[in-house]
Image 1 (cartoon, one colour):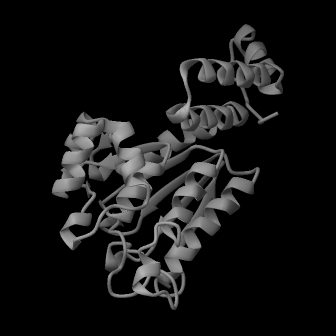
Image 2 (tube, rainbow, N blue to C red):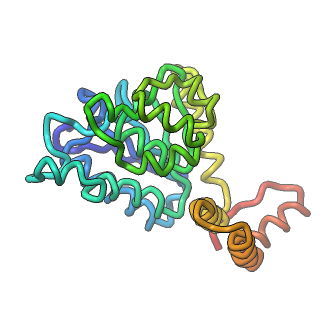
Length: 262
């Protein structure tokens, strides 16, 4: 299964879980995985039954980055497989262009492009036994996979420079302290906590989530006035939606709203 099907895909109550499935390689990226992940992310984005996407890894790793034993794309030259727009750019775009919340459930090591995948996700949670690293300098490489875009925005320039230039390992506790991840859970409780967290997200308002994601991504390059205008435009869209009407009714009826993305 692992050689031919690099991903496990399940859907439960609006939660699409995508599991990178090369555990013998700590889910390092080979040609099949490089091509499959953006494809299934785009499928999830188009599927109205999917409310939230969870990306995690099989076995002991989340994603150990590029499998240096084989190119990331069939027939690719060394230069091509290190081109950030050749495949890792596709990964990042597939995550950021998905208008549903994408949660990285970091169950084990996340390194290189796996670190970039983790950073690109809207939300990140981590097992207490997991770790992450930029790692590129260990192989004489500069970063790709959006690491130098996401990391300074998450932790600041000085800390990002330290993490990238040293390539050191970051424990789950340190990742939480510096704001790389929102939650750290014990390894034996990790899967259950991820499921509960994702279920809570899946019950949320799809339209508001999509517009919020646009706002958060756009804020990096917007002035305050531009961002205020964008917020006003999007909240007006929300106020005209069925989900807001449902939320108001639920408030008055003292019940939990049932959002339909309308």
